[in-house]
Image (cartoon, rainbow, N blue to C red; front, side, top):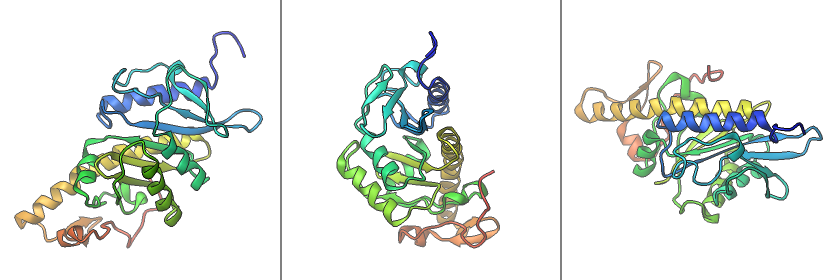
Length: 249
């Protein structure tokens, strides 16, 4: 390896930049979040590119590529990077090992998603650009970083492996899972999803208020009524599955 070049430099630069952008766009907060994506070396050996622990609390979203971790997929040991491995790594590995199509696991504390996650109600999925993630459900509660939380995610993936998806972690945040030709492509999809779903979260909130005010008689998406507040309170998935999109733009 040439002097001055770090292991998986392009991937770690992409991660460091995305951490800064996500933090500044307020799609996560100082309570944390953790992002990872898969990559391989020239011999096909798999590694996880992952944010270090305390990326938000200690560094406020400003980390260098050298701080980004490189984790051996098989041994789950850090082989490069200056930070320490978050205890939430077990949830990331549960995703990767349960569904091999997953190339990126993105967990953040975006405010719109957190609102719906703490309510215990599924987020109505109403905008055209978010339909590919289908129903945005709230998973059962388990404390963050625990084996119990990783097991809940694993069980949900076994029941519903279709990608991409965004799930809400009760009182904890959002979990986005994506596939792609490689890890960086999947990572870019996750960054897109968190941004557009945050817009959807506010729209869903406002449509809920309009229903309670009597201005709307239900949730509307692509010119169709797709549910009501009563459906929401009954935890029925609300999204336009009548004419699904071919994909995210």
